[in-house]
View 1: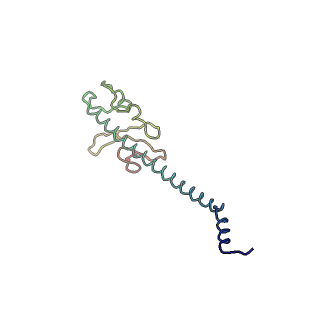
View 2: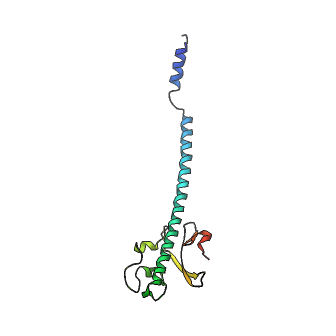
Length: 149
């Protein structure tokens, strides 16, 4: 049999019709690496979003505590606990839009409140919680900005 350029090209085409196992494994390895990077960055983004949400909820609770304080029926007293915002002793409905849900942080823990000395010498509420990784979060910020002692 005499090999012609046409028959050689035809044999090469038949031999190269599919991918080799090595090529498939390389592509799968690249996809696994890319998906791992995507999952890690997504989880980091979600944790950052939870921390931001917790800080905003702390701000909202601190404003609600101040609203409780300035209410003439409260006698210029701060609430003894965050539960007092749900059922104020001076009557009326809950001061929180979502009720008990507003007292729970994104990690399922209860927010805490303590009263600290403000710049003007008066006591001010510090609403705080801790993230899953232990980062303190308050209405002032997260980590060192949180003013937690």
